[in-house]
Amino acid sequence: MKYVALITARSGSKGVVDKNIKELQGHPLIAWSIRLCKKSTLIEKVYVSTDSKKYAAISESYGAEIPFLRPAELSKDNSTDFDVFEHALNYFEKNGPNIENFIHIRPTTPLRDVNEINEAINIFQKNEDNISSLRSVHEMTESAYKSFEIDKNGNLASLNKSISLKDSNLPRQSLPKTYVANGYVDVLKARTIREEKNIHGNNIFGFITPVTHEIDTTEDFDYIEWQVQKNPEIYKQLFEGI
Image 1 (cartoon, helix red, strand yellow):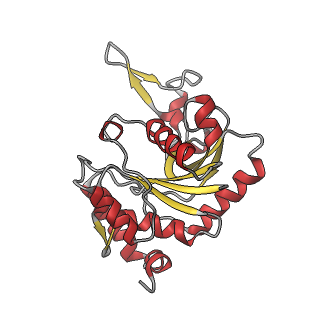
Image 2: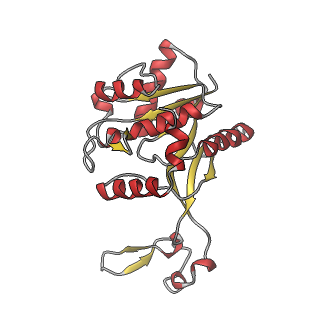
């Protein structure tokens, strides 16, 4: 299969208990990601990797497939994305299907447009011979060139050594644009994961998306709820008719 979605959703979150199934406008958070992937005309299968039977049952009710349960040792706070994808690859290589590329979707970034997902896949397809993966980013509101670290004496130092403390006070428009990875969508090659032992590799295409927000705290969740109420089209695109 050319493109399959893998939605990664462990249980046991600390900041917001059972965050991935907490209801957002009447549907569990993970459902927003599942429905998004089901709406894409380019994603062939939608899988969920979870350690929870409860999460698995909820995911199946929204149309995802759960071919395995992720082991508890790969579902800890310090478990890495590579651990999760290597486990999935091991399963699929043994049991099928043969997967070329994964669309990595995180439930904690629920407000997405399916057209952006399709655009990311199309761009990846046009460039796949020359890149190791595609990763979504959005422009930072303040250039990272204006960021600091604190040295052992308690003094500020420019985080980027190519810029002086004086120049860090330049207007934002005078400094290079910088971007932050945002979890909107990543397109990952199975071959890269296997050969380079990480999910993105070293030649990553930056796919610029609208500014998006990830849920880590209850305040984040409240803000996302406000965004949905402000723009009901987001909800309708995914759940109208259910």
